[in-house]
Amino acid sequence: MNTTLRTYAELVRAPAAITVPGDVLAGALAAGRPGIRRTTGLAASSVALYWAGMALNDWADRAEDAMERPERPIPSGRLTPRAALATAVGLTGAGLGLAALAGGRRTLLRRTLPLAAAVWAYDLGLKSTPLGPAAMAAARALDVLHGTGPGRAAAALPAATAVAAHTFAVTRLSRHEVDGAPTSEPKLSLATTTAITGAGAARLLAVAGPRATTAAAALSDRPGTQQPTPARLFTAAVDGAHLGGPAAGSVAALLAAAGAPDAPAARKPVDALVTGAALATYAGTCARAQAAVVRDPSAPRVRAAVGAGIHALLPLQATLVARAGAPLLALPLVAALPLVGRLARKVSST
Picture 1 (cartoon, helix red, strand yellow):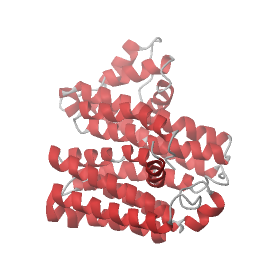
Picture 2 (cartoon, one colour):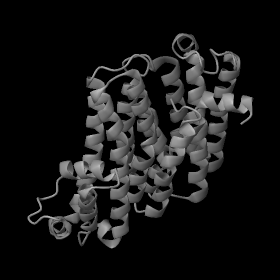
Picture 3 (spheres, one colour):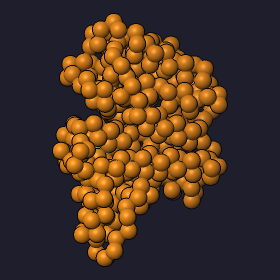
Picture 4 (cartoon, helix red, strand yellow):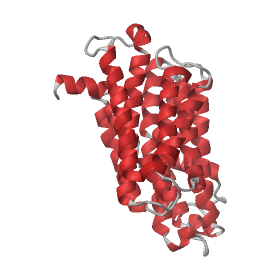
């Protein structure tokens, strides 16, 4: 890679932007407005704003990075502060322009401008305050709502809430990347992952109804299988994400049960199957790294868990997309997880 290009890729944490389009897609599908042209344009707009926020973050933190992260582009002398700020301004303008082209003036005013304002407010004022994690979570929620376009966004609020809760926990943990974390922080992150996974499992079980117990008992190696619960599905999901062991069979049993007669999942069992698989991947991606930090809250473990949390947005988005009835669109999001991990080894996501 060209040296200058690599420097700018480091500045904007280019690989992490792979986690952005899924927000927009989840919001568009939840609101029932998944137009290809508009959704693609708004996703590109969100990527530009994400990169703008990363560049602005390095500009705002340049003094702190000089002491804590001297290898970053600005303190290392590879990029001037003015160039970083100009990059942030230019990418923000690009994001606004792409949104206007894709969604029109109403989308720009109702969705994109609030998102851009949230990004700049976080980087320039709120990041170092107690409101920082909530501000970042709000920005990520606005990114989900970005996909709804100019219309009503109420249908996308559950998806936005899930992404916001995950982002809140990851952002809180990221504050301890340099010096390590008190054990309360990784415990909060792990509890958030558990809650999100449990909520997703509860929705699967709600459409499965009493058939969940019958299917689980039929596929279990042991008779008298217990009634499935979100907590048990979470345990199975985490273990199943390791791609082995009897818990993986438990996940399959519970997913096969999805399909109450008058629920959407009954008409499209594949939606439930892909939703559950994505949920298991999300749980496994987050929980293993977070549990490692609970055991050893050192700075390297914290950084690894933060990176895993950023990457886990992909299977979380895939869960929301499949739940909205688009399992085929969810599959590329899950498939991108190994790719973003490989790219992050070349250009850090944090």
